[in-house]
Image (cartoon, rainbow, N blue to C red; front, side, top):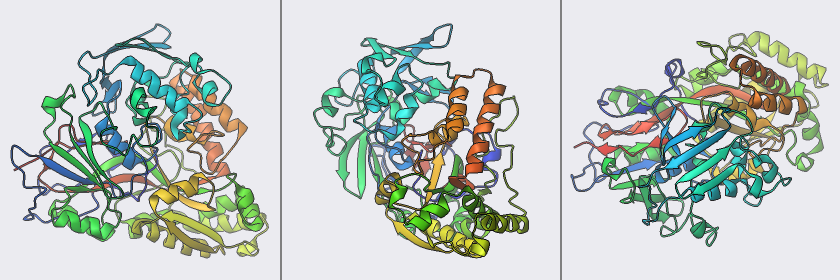
Length: 568
């Protein structure tokens, strides 16, 4: 899933087991992932609550583009969706599936047919029963070509799904069917070990056909139409400012929900967000000035959590490249130029002197923290470049440019590096601009607000652009399948037949060792062709008022407030 802002990392984070982290019992001297800092004696109306009124304000750090489960592809939107909706399954602290709306399920002997049995007490926020047909409609809506959902490929595991989505099949052939109101049958093309975990992903949340079909554009912006089935329901929407949710009294687990109000703010400026936490207007925030991380940790207001993701740059290799200047198009289409750009980046300097949040310099695309094919192994065990040998890397970069016909960068056009507005992204871009200048590559920097930036990157209105990806489940596939030809999140429009074939083989392979080897071959191609330049592996840094308890932060990006509360 796309992330809209720089995340600061803790060096030890991904060396730990990838489990969720809860704020239950955290003291004022503990640290974690935060972007703002508060003072121990700070009080406010948002943190001074009574037993009769519990309110928590969470700053997303960006303007959320959509909260439609089918259309969202960013972390900020998924955090909202994860608290408004609930899927067939939920994830436990180890990112493994546990019952959600489905209280049980059966699996056929060949592991291809799943039969889910829904809870009889599952209700929508308007009191209507949650039905198996709601899931069938929602999944087929994601696959409908007219929906143009970037995440449609997450359902390609179903029989007939890819064919329907790409226009060569019928909706009636898709392998999801409501047998009755409480029974959903799903048929897969191949056994998929992480399929149950996928059913907890925001894209696969149920939605109401009667509401969405009647209000296709307005249903996510009008509280009376945004009917949901999770712990919270939308009460108020203030464009570019906030979403206000309240406890869903029709949620089957409402007795465990302690918050009366959950408010999501969209403060992008790091200094303002930091000030909002300090003055008590916000209880948790995604963003803060880099300089405040260490002081915040020392004071107990900064928490750092594991984050399964990679910060990288995307190079436009095939996305409306006819609109690019011819010299830019020619240069960026040469993989030797792309490889040189990658080698010239001193990743260690960036994480130690620029971001300063304990990030891990990337030596591959798939990040640390994902098991390999054999038990006890790590998939990210291959280093595609030596982050500690910058003299050697620079020498190789210069040789590649000369081989491509650009000795010392002579003849190269000035490239444009686009990033979404954020001080951290700016500092990284400025550092890389200087590093590229050292090999004769000139770059101009440009920035756009998050929502505009997403459209620019998707539509190919970029040369080189900031990017980031957070795993949707704990498996290398969540990082590698997105680069298949024609998929919605493949912004550079990278296309390689051998790569596509390997990913398809891996999807069908049931032997974990063989599957891992196939995925390694795919990453080898990706790191050779270099349509993307990995820079570092993420962690999450958040500002957290010590009075906040019970919030669960997942390494997959979601933040869950079902058990959250403000301590007196």
